[in-house]
Image (cartoon, rainbow, N blue to C red):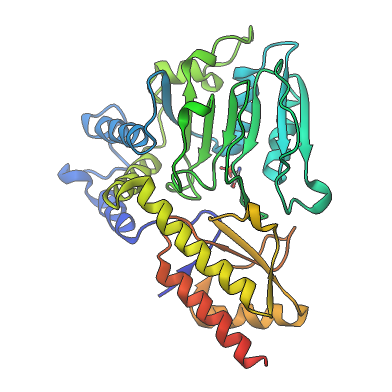
Length: 355
Ligand SMILES: *Cc1c(COP(=O)(O)O)cnc(C)c1O
């Protein structure tokens, strides 16, 4: 048995893998594979409808918001957010809390003036800046809720005088949020919600259509809303697997229940990192992520042997991102707490062996 701490594409519930495999062979007793049925068939439309309904239910999405399942990953949203929200000659505000945020900033610059309200680049993003003012005359304020590479996460969202746009790729559905606080939420599915190939977008309808830009159909949120995420052929399989994962989440008690589990997993792991003299955390305590736990070894000579020790225990995917080094244990929704305890045991045994 493997304990998958990979950062993304990440772990999904085992029962979802089984259901997805079954649907590839015979989807819902149709005698057809999910890979060959029409996206306009009643069977697939039911999948998409249920996926949208589950998103609305699990996040208590208020009236006036649309839920979309699009292609192109979160990286496409880096461009589509300004394309759809930033008027010609207008400006947008960004918080630079990591590489994903800085990539979003780079894309926004194609569309207009981009103000970076604060950055923690000087510390290699070991904290999230909080001391800044959001310019009230910008079209929107863009943030990243969880910085996957560095293991920092906003524990409390900002109060913004302008629509807040949030990249939630790596902590979507991991905790309760108030959707009404946001103008636009987007997330590549493959970290915490489903497989690669689909991106969730939740957008407040009233912020659209104000840019004066002509936007090609596929890049225009309004076309996608009108088409019900089916302006063209949607990623049917990825949407099915996301829907099954959301169903699983609902059956577990929803976002509130998973949040408690995620907090317990994170607490157990950070407690061990703080206790074990061989390891130390990467980020400031107040911004510690409950999804990606980054840590390094005190003695660089321990790095490779610890990785190897983990491999022998079936612990996979904990090598840190190349820009941070050390280790990153991603403890997404589907990772059971028992796997976290296997990692903690490995850390303790490794300490014993290296006394
Ligand atoms: C992984 C990730 C991305 C990139 O997602 P793609 O779907 O590969 O484009 C963007 N933002 C965050 C926070 C991520 O974790």
